[in-house]
Image (cartoon, rainbow, N blue to C red; front, side, top):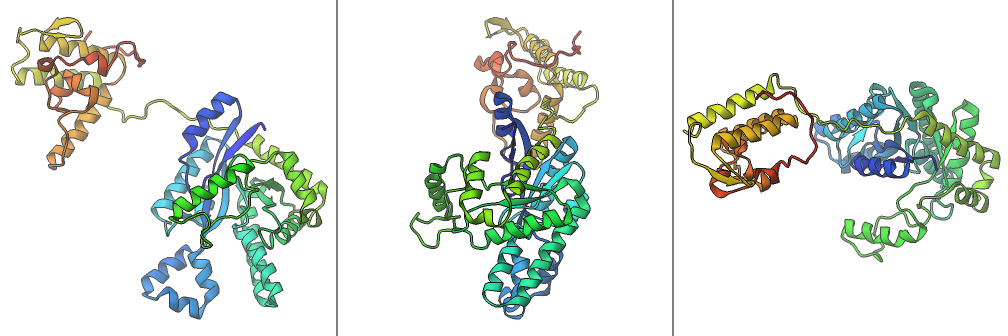
Length: 419
C-alpha cells in the first residue's frame, strides 16, 4: 500500500508514532481523525439550560432524545499543512467547546475549518449509514414514516457535506459483515446508488481495530479491561466480529463476493471505489511536520542571560571568589564555571529556553506553589542555580555540568554573547 491514514476516535495522539514509522517504511502517512459528530450541539446547550430531564425528553420526543445524546462518526483527513492545522483546530474545539461524554464536532466547525481537508462519510455509525440502517429496521417493523424521515436526514446530510467540500467529500462503502451488522447491506446499496445518482465518488473502507484477524481476541480482552468486565459478559460493548483487521484489496474483494454485499452493488462499483482510495491518497501530501523547537522569541536572549548570571554572581559574592572546585576534570571558580556553561548554552541556542524556565519557576514561587529543590542532571548546572531554577550549588557538591549538557550533544550554533 502506498499510503496509510490514521484515524483514531476523537484523538490525534498517535501521530508522532505513525510519522516516525512512516519515515522508517517509506509509506506515506496521512493524518486524520474519526471525529465524533453531532449536529444538535446548540439544541443540547439549550436543553441543558432549560432544567429539563433526559427522562422527560425521552418520553415526549424519543427521536430527538436519541439524536441529541448520541454522536455519529465522520472521517476527516488532512491533505496538506493547512489541512493539518485545521484538523488540530477542529479537534481542539471538539474537546474545549463540544465535549459531551465525547469531543464532538458539528457542521459549522467542519465548514469553518474545511480548507485542506478530505471528508469521508464515515463508518456504520456515521450520520449517513446509521440513518440508512435504522430506516431499514424501521421498514421491517412496519414504521414507514420513521424510515422516510431517517432516509431524508441521511440524504440531506450527504448533500450538505457535498455542497461544502465538493470533490473532497467521498461516500464510504463498508462491509462489516452482513450477519454481524443488520442493515449494512442495505446501507451499502443505498450509498452506492446515491453515489451514482448524485455524482459523489465512493471509497471502499474497512474499520480497522487490529492488524490481523487473530488479534480480535486480544482486542476483546482490551475492551473488557476498559469497561471493567469479563470477556464473556453479555453486556460487554464490542463489535462482535473478527473482520475489523487490516485488509488487503484482495481480502476486501473476497468479502464483497462471498458475502451478501455483491447483491447491493456491482463488482465494477467495488473496483472503482477501491481505485478512489488511491485518488484520496494522491490528494494528500503526507505528514511533513516542522520538528524545530517551538520557543517564544526573546529579543537579545543571549545578552539577557549573561547579564542575569553575572548579576547573580555579584549578588552572592561569587564573582571575585578565588575558591576552586573540581568539576568535570577541571579546577574552576564560580565565575569560570559560569562562563563555561554560558558559552555552551549560547552555542547550542538554548538561552531562550533557560530564560523561559526561569520565568516559569519564578511565577510558581511567587504564588507559593511547590517547586522542588532540583531535578535530575539539571542539578549540575551552576547557571540554573544562579537563575534560581533550582537551589543546589553544584560546585559545592561536585556535580557535573557535562552530564546535564554534554558538548557532544547537538545544538544550534549561534554567535555567543561572550565574544
